[in-house]
Amino acid sequence: MRIAIDGPAGAGKSTIARMIAERLGLLYIDTGAMYRALTYMVLANNVDPNNEKQIAELIKKFDFEIRSDEIFLAGQNITRKIREPEVTANVSLVASHFAVRQALVDLQKQIAQQDNVVMDGRDIGTCVMPDADLKIFLKASVKERARRRALELARRGFSFKLEEIEEQIRERDTKDSNREISPLRKAEDAFEIDTTDLTIEEVVEQVLLLCARGKTNV
Ligand code: DC
Image (cartoon, rainbow, N blue to C red):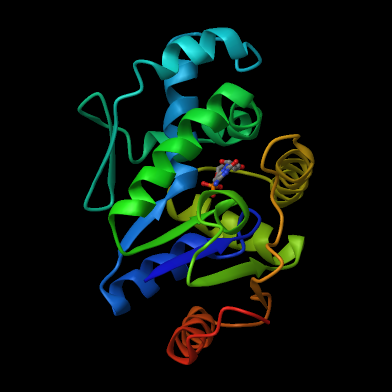
């Protein structure tokens, strides 16, 4: 069983994907965490996020590992660090480079071949697992996505302005949707779920229902 979950930032992908994986006993892969880990590495090495050539060199040393929900880079636990605002602000730019997409999509394809997985991201249904058994595209209004992100930041003790978060989300949507290589796009055969007014449990139920029906076409 291979399930692809795509959608913009804050649509609920990781929460839903994690719960579906748990319920169905599948491996959960957060591909956004891979782009974030690489972005963390770029910033930690004082490499300009615009410099594709230097980033391509860094990728050769990209020693990434997921151990039961924790993210490691060269053995160092960076789970919290990859969620910091500086990483979030630069990740769409880093993820837009050809060399980055080539390397990380390749890695994700290898993982998808080996296991029963739920993978979430932006291009999973279109690029990484075009033959997934079930494709879900989650969306939600910008206001609701900003509200969710604000709650998450507050929980982790960051201070912020709601309008700034909304602006960042819009910016990331634009960058992720308009990049040349594997942009954020709903696969033709994906089921679209608008999570704006739904609870997490309601979304999970809808996805499980789709799994049970074994549907792959709208
Ligand atoms: O899901 P997230 O917010 O953690 O993802 C961080 C960024 O990584 C997102 O803004 C775009 C990029 N990304 C991508 O380009 N392709 C993916 N499959 C997953 C994430």
